[in-house]
Amino acid sequence: MCGRYVTPEEAAMERYWHIGACNSGRWIRRMYNVAPTDTVPMVILNDQSETEVVAARWGLIPFWWKKAAPPALSFNARSEEAATKPMWRHALKSQRCLMPAAGWYEWNENEPATNRAGRKVNQPYYHHAADDQLLTIAGLWSTWDGPDGQDVLSCALLTRDAEGPVAAIHHRMPVILAPEQWELWLSPATSPEQVHSAIALSRTGFDAYRVSTDVGNTRNQGAELIEPI
Image (cartoon, rainbow, N blue to C red):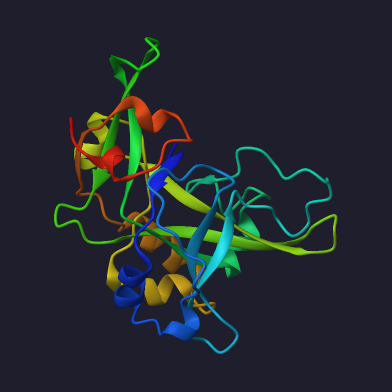
């Protein structure tokens, strides 16, 4: 499960997707310790079929949700189940997005560590591309009519079985798409077979290193969180 990640700078997203200022949004603030329910950037195709960066709640709320409180633990979608689970299947079919990231955190359950409070925890690792290029996580999005009558835009990232170096640290990883897969992933014309193929062919080669246990506290932010120890 991927429950924490790092968002890139706005300028990096603009360069990566060749997005103009009118479609980039000026709300974006780089975060070094994104947690579920935070507001995050996601890339979608707008009504003019243009690539646009918009703000979304990390934790998908399906359009049919009737309760006043959002669902819990809806920030990760297992790619193996997404086509059949009611929580995900509509979005997987027609509302796919890209979630920009600089990297993500995962905790090694087989490597004990001690945090600043003296409590025993698992050792956190920061995963990133070897060239430190921006990562593109395959995501799903939805619009929900909240109890106050306001539309809530939300998203979830897809996960898959870990492969490569990641598998030595954790059994799951985000589905991270290569640039040649972006257009296909966002297009509403993409078939279910093409969607599943994109997931199967997603990237697996990433570097990782140990970071401070401070990342375990969501109040902690700052570039020091991704410094190796």
